[in-house]
Amino acid sequence: RLLLHVGLFLATVVTTILAGALQQGVNPLETPELLYKGIPFSFTLLLILGTHEMGHYLVSRKHHLDVTLPFFIPAPPIPFIIGTFGAFIRIRSPIGDKRALLDVGCAGPLTGVLVSIPVILIGLKLSAVTVMGGHGEELILGEPLLFKLLSWLVFGHLGPQENVILNPVAFAGWIGLLVTALNLLPVGQLDGGHVAYALFPDYHRYISLGVLGLLVVIG
Image (cartoon, rainbow, N blue to C red):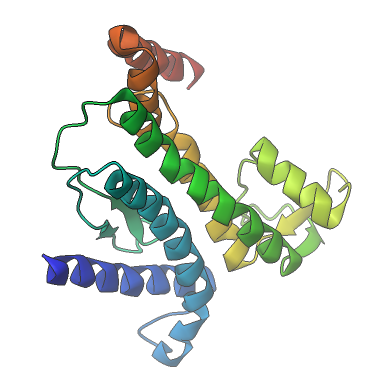
């Protein structure tokens, strides 16, 4: 299956480079020579996703679990602006130990965040601050508290009309935080769900349903 893993990874490299180039205003059909502009976004995003999954993989191997290499999932850059649906590993053996389940569930988010933080700092250093033009063309992203803290470390206090135009590296870091946050939801087979099951096996179903209900109410 090594060829399958390599093939999916290379396909995801292509789709994320296309996505990064489109974000920079490149038309792949008219100016294919400018596709290199999508490489910083692609490299950064795949670094974060790959580190996340390798965290799961290495800890699974440490606990002697039968586990696959990461499967990267390519996605068409239009309409999926990041060019991928993420990545996952498949654990083919049962996990009979709570400690192993807890370690495997935590390893991915922890390693992913450890990579995302320096990536975001580098990306913010390469980003620019402008005054919002009010043209309705800007893509306004939500700011996680961690992202706000890193932005403050780089730019200090920004006025209400000042907006950070994210460099592709910083945008990929933001995506990394989003993916980590979604994975940490204590629901089902997500990483947070594994942690919740390891800590509260008798209440996992109720926690999952409760969180899903809360998300619906909040939404």
